[in-house]
Length: 370
Ligand code: NAD
Image (cartoon, rainbow, N blue to C red; front, side, top):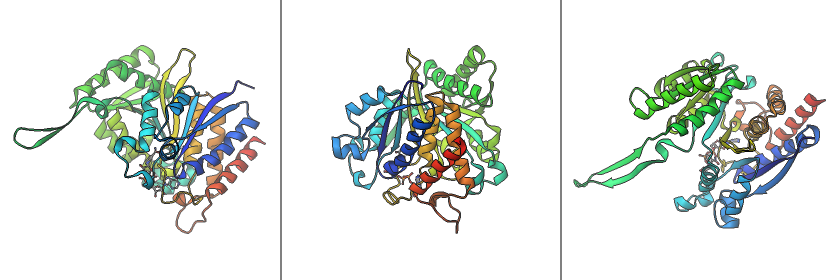
């Protein structure tokens, strides 16, 4: 038995805890059946933390997160906390975790499960077999650059300012994550910016090119302008393997890519930081969806995005690709068997509950592992 992994679970608000309950069953299954053991700790984040601890994430929880091998988060937010001032909202808990853990690389896979090709907004032949990974820079760029603000002008009008700014180390560290991923996948990386109109884009392109030549000559590197990339993602998404891009373009392009796969309830993500001297990388895994207050507490949520986030954790934090594959295959199996929560059901198709989806996953895992 390998040494136990320290896993912090922050289920959060709304459907977060319901989805997480099903994922816990899979974690326990892995714990018993596979060569991986977990020391699990739990904490509060978002509205749940505001109510119980007076802040969207407590210092103690941040400390635990920093000392964990990985964090698995459910979702935060809900109408109960909508009227709080911006700085006290549930989402600030998530933002603080990302900031304090310096999670600079956001990984958003867009994977189309065969059984769900009809759920995509695109034609089945365009998305069938789709498997792309978008790596978005998460802690720099225009969302954080200075100067920023809104200022009054002498003529009584106003000016809004944000600054797109990137340095060599910021570009290199996220590009390195993307090159590494490409090496483990189809060996192709497409770097996306707007070097035609932005100096930060020129720098981005030059630095990625230099890094590729120096450290990853075996990875096929291409470059694309962000506007063209948006078009190509809906025209011919299967041309991509890994895409790396900045914070702003990544925000938009990863959401566009998400819709290629059909439902928010199926989309996992990972946010990665730097590696420490022991080779441990700060990492937080979470579904892309929010707390879905409209269905919270009704046993209707699709737990698969959270489950697939756990699979990403196995793959990227613990190097347990076989166990991650097993979970992804179990998801394929239950979808192929026609199990659908409401978000991924076609009209007229029978719908299973959150817990029934969990049952089906465990049964599929048992069958695969038999
Ligand atoms: P949402 O993702 O919570 O929900 C959007 C729609 O998708 C809803 O109709 C919901 O029922 C459905 N949906 C989402 N996930 C689903 C799942 N797993 N299974 C079935 N259906 C699912 O987005 P929203 O409604 O814009 O936001 C609700 C709350 O979540 C807000 O407070 C928002 O701030 C917060 N939010 C949090 C995160 C996060 O925790 N990372 C992300 C987005 C939104």
